[in-house]
Length: 450
Ligand code: MN
Image (cartoon, helix red, strand yellow):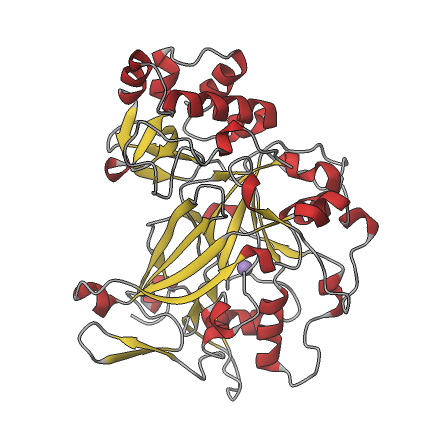
């Protein structure tokens, strides 16, 4: 796991005035792919409300370390796969170089050269940070599995026995992963109400979100060569926010007996900024498993994973309805949780993914699975918050009247925020992951009626 070094010093400040106290202080330095309208996409690092344009920086000659130069050259491309493939020493060399260039004690000539490479985030358009070859979505929150299970069963233990042994996942759809800010169209699909004789085709009536983290694979592994748990974090580049949009009515009908298909493949949103594993080093926490549950098999258990395999990433879900937006009332917070509650760590997910020989590629995306905590207010999906719609959310419409939501309505925007904080260290944020729901297409789009 990443070690602490001078880049985690809470006393360090940047000459970029907006950095300290923002989501992106000098201790964070997350990566994205961006452009201004009309320009080519390239890599950037966030600092305060600015982006350090890594293509411009490569041209500036301000970076002298050879490994950092090599890393920087890879960041000038419109996708960061080649940069991710370089591995931890190159990632760390570039992080160290950026930190020194942006630190308050940089020489005036350095500050002038680097300042010329800054682009305001307000002017930026973002795209996916990598060409995502593969997307796998896990199911690793005990509390999520328990909440969902209880909606459909009165049994004592509703979580399947394999949940404690296997970091469960399905292979998702990489082609429909979209960057934050992209609108998400309510899907058409098949659903069968319990009392109906046969299914119907129509717009999803139970549209939901799932708050997750996106884990980006850095260096891949060769087909047939598993990655042992002790090495698996070396293959992770960093983490972003991820919304696994879910059509619950379609899911309920199609997932018998196979995994999610149309219920999930219409869109998955990710936040533009990837916070590196190095930046997350201070916020590691012990990982443990309650003694009442089975402990992991040996290949999913190491002392290092138990000592600091979990990460305390605080997460919030906000909902901005169309009526609230129209009145300028802004979003309401509907849940709050942390990644530290997860039943499996990121390292365990990656190790298990490869145990049978499956090869991960640089730039692949793993979803953590819905992140729910132990209490009702920590639920990671609307399905849990509203008990499958039986207890709708109620919130002020922005004019004193009450709006209700059993599931998402057209015009609703779902916004995720995340951050890490710990005494003695800077607070670092993830920015936000946002998506607004568009109405479904008319049935004529699939050749029905009209
Ligand atoms: Mn999911």
